[in-house]
Image (cartoon, rainbow, N blue to C red; front, side, top):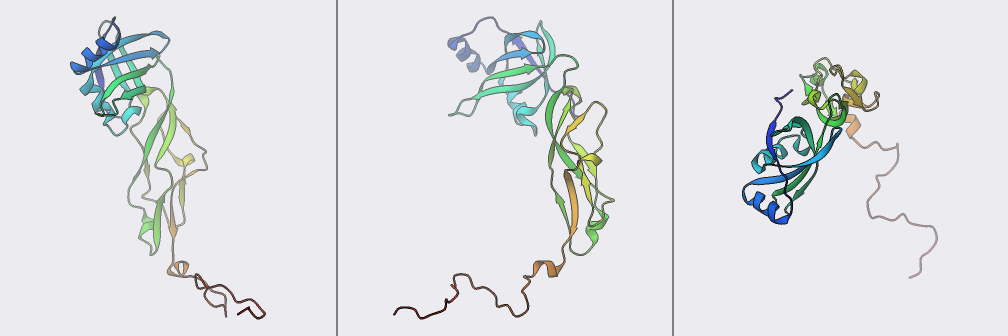
Amino acid sequence: MADKIVVKAVKRDTRGKNENRRLRAAGKVPVVVYGGGSVSLAATAELKDLAAIIRTDSGANTVFSLDIEGEGINDVIFQDRQIDPIIGRLVHADLRRFSKGEKIEMTVPITLIGHPAGLDEEGAVLTQALREIKVICEPANTPDAIEVDISEMAAGHAIHVSDLKVAAGIEIVEPGESVVASIASIKEADLEPQLEEGAAPEVVGETPAEGGDTEG
């Protein structure tokens, strides 16, 4: 799991359009923090810090620590954000705070590790049906990815959700029978069109002739 991102913020007591303009001109973003069993509060954070989180692989789904001066550190996630449609800049954000022990639903990627033995067979094709999966866990325990070792997979075999290994305290939200990855053998004959004996190939655009004379 990657090191937790920590963003420093300052509590603010004044609000309004003029105040927000002043903050944005200074490279800051007004945010509202709520949830976690505490009252909501207004704060400001550096635009560059919040923008850097949005640019990560997990983007706005990233769980990070917000260190509000005089209020302590809390795990938060973007609940809502406003982007200036003209300059594409973050101008406001609502952040959801988590209470100790609270679990949330997160989406994490699935990474296939290793070279399958079955892929060396002629015509073998590897298919990854699931590239990400939802899990329920404490924000601090959210895995960067779920790694799946496929080095022992043989042709004609599949790995299902029920085969995935996750750490204690993490619950997978997906039916166990769902296929994660599989290896199928595709023979050349399977790719050739099969015609019944004596049947003529259909020509696109040709209409079968009907019995009887047609009017001239």
